[in-house]
Image 1 (tube, rainbow, N blue to C red):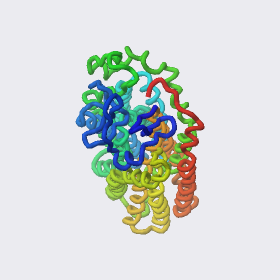
Image 2: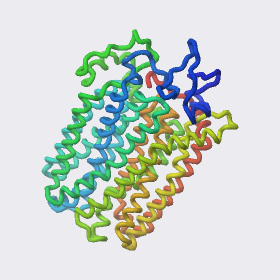
Image 3: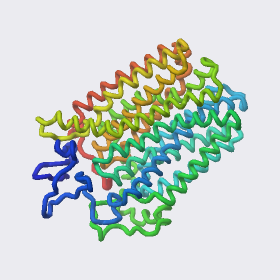
Image 4: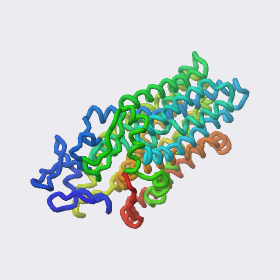
Length: 511
C-alpha cells in the first residue's frame, strides 16, 4: 500500500514507510487535482492515513473529542504503576501489622508487577475480537473492584491476591493505549501523542510513593489504596461517558460500515459483538500477540527494553528501604525525594515535544543523497541522545548510596536516569508503531510487558544484591548492562529495515 505524491512513493507500508524528505521536514505539499488529490490538514500536513468521508471515522473526529479521549486513556494508563508503586511505601506499616519483613511484604508488589505485563497482552488480544471500548470499560470495572479489595484486605494473603488481580486488569490502557492513538491521529501526530501518553505512564510509579508517603504520616496504610480506588472509579466513569469505540475498518465502504448504535451498547460491547464477523475470529485474535513478538525487530526491542527499564522498577520499589536508614528519613522526607523523578519525567515530556520531530527533520536532511526517504529506524536516534543520561544516573545513584553523598545529589542522579528513560520510551514506542502500524496494540503490549517483567525480576533481589556487592558495584553493573544492550539499538538502526523485509508483513484481518 502506498500513497503517491507527484509520482513518488510517499509512504509504503511494505518496505518501511518511506516518506519524502520534503514531507518529513515540512509535511507540506500542494494537493494534486483530480482523483489522486490528497487530503491535508489546515496547516498543510499530508494526512496519513488518508481519512474517509465518514464522520464516524475516528480520524475525522473533532480536536476536542480526540484529545478528551487521549486524556482519559492516558489517565487510565496512570493507574497500574501508580497503584503498584504505592506498595513501595505502604509495606513499611504493613510489615509491622502483619509481623513480616519489608522485603517479604514487597512480594505483593512483585506479583502485581508481573500481572501488569501479562494483562497488556490479553488486553490487545481481547480488543481485536470484542472491540476497544468494551475491553477498556470492563477491565476498568474489575480494576475498580480489586483496588477496593486491596484497601479492605484484612490479611497479607488476601491483600496479595487482590494486588495480583488488580495488576492484570488495571493495565488495560497501558497495553491498549497505542491502539487508540493510532486509530485517532495521523502519522505526523504520533510522536507527540505518544509523548503525552508515555508521560502519564513514566510519572505514575513516582506519584504513588510520593502521595502515599505524605498520607501515611497521618493516616492508616489503607488510605492510599482507597485513593487508588477513587481514581480508578473516576477513570471508569470517564471511559463510560467520554471514550468511544475507535476501531474503524477503512477497507469497508461507508455504506457497509456496521451501525454505531447507542453509546450504552457500544460501552458494554453489544454493538461490537453484533459486528464481530467483520473482525478477527477469537483464535486469530489470541494469536496476534505471538505473531508480533516473533518479528525480529519487535523481539530485539523487547530484549533491549527489558534490560533498560528493569532498573526503573527496581529502584522505585526498593529505594525507600535504602534511603530511610541512610539519611534517617521518615515517610515525609521519602515523599519529598520522589519529587525528583516526577519533575524529571515532566521535563522529559516537555523536551520530547520538540526533540522527536527535530530528529526526524535532521534525519531527512542527512538522507538528501539517499532518495530522501524516511524509515522507522529514524525514531531510534533519540535513544543515543538519552543513553548518557540513563547511564550517568545509574552510576551516580550507586555512589550516593555507597558513600552517603548528600540526598540532593541522589535526587539529581535519579532525575537524570528518569529523564533519559522518558525520551527512550517514546522513541522505542514510536519506532515499533511505525514499523508495524497494523499491530499498534500488540507492539505496545510487548514493550509494556518487557519493562514490567524486567522490574518483576529485579525487585526480587535488588536489595539483597546491593547488600551483597555494595550499591556502587551493583548499580555499576546495571549501568554496564544498560550500556551493553545499546548494541541492540545499533543492530536495529543498521539492519532494522532489512530484518522487517526478511520477516515479511503481518497479515492480520484488521489493524
